[in-house]
Image (cartoon, rainbow, N blue to C red; front, side, top):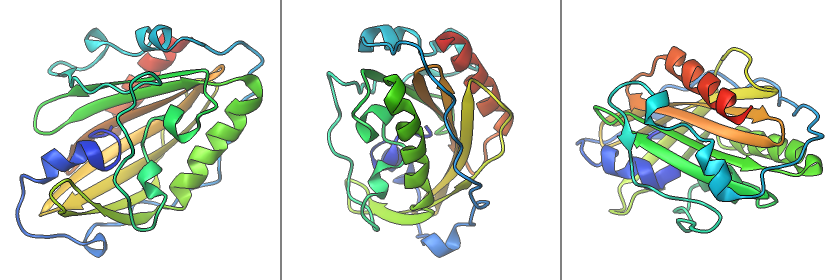
Length: 230
């Protein structure tokens, strides 16, 4: 969520392969459509990160075979700066929303590992009424500036990323979706992601697998997360 966010969580899985890929070898996903506007959010944001964590999905909400990854990121326990990318700034892709847009009153993250390098990762951030629209738009603008970028893992192995649009059904108060293809050493991970607004809260829901992911899994997980936040 994705295998998780950015370079940090994809590196271990990709290191298992051999050979090499470049960005040009990875098929380009569909182009992005227009930036989606946030819905009006006149309510009160969640202001406690532990309360927000309790409203993220737990194993009972997920397909069989997914267990907590043990990765923890929150406003009180950040993981640290992600590795740099080329072009600069694309390291923000799929980092938790609360790190991308620090105006959040509370944010938290939870991750789950499944079979064969699959994963489901969810983070959420709750914003004041005047900040949720700018946050929703800014995250989408970052994606559109990073349709092809590269980085390295902890062992300095090159990782190439291709980013593009994804069709998903309506959910929450506003939703936009995208896909990320991450390639290195002959292995490609595919991540399908929805960024969904529920009142004053934005949630980023990501499902990752080797080579392909059923979009219906993302649809179901996103709908379940919207119900937990409603």
